[in-house]
Amino acid sequence: MERIPTLFSLAKRNAISASVVCPICEEEIESAEHLLVSCSFAQSVWCIIAGWCKVPPIFAFSIRDLLELYRFSCLPTRKAKVFHAVCLATMWCIWKARNSLLFERKPVRHTHGSAGSGHGSNGLEMNLIQVEHISSRKSAARERWIWIGKKVVEKRGY
Ligand SMILES: [Zn+2]
Image (cartoon, rainbow, N blue to C red; front, side, top):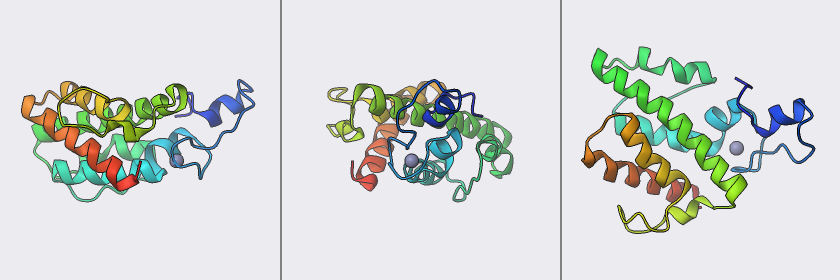
């Protein structure tokens, strides 16, 4: 999974000499596993995703665990497929939010604003809106994703 160009994987390839600390929590080395699984921010996101998808709390120790969550979700086949799409899209969202923070210096707190306004949004909120398209949800889900984004932001205090 270190094909994802995290700071740690780039440093291992001598592609960078800068800090390899996770830009989100600033507590651990940023590997793909850390960013998507064990980072406190990622854990907040997975906690909310579990609640929203009405599945048991998500305990993952690796990216492989996340990729196989749908198999153990106890959801009917069709819902399990949607849940799998949501998981994939969520990983993508976390990656995009990380990139916005790292390269555009856009703190996640910028997602605060009126729901659905589309103004002042970036990173997580924008990405969660795009998740809605990926997971083939109807327009009502859009507001829900924005809400999830805000809850994550509020919980993390960004
Ligand atoms: Zn982190």
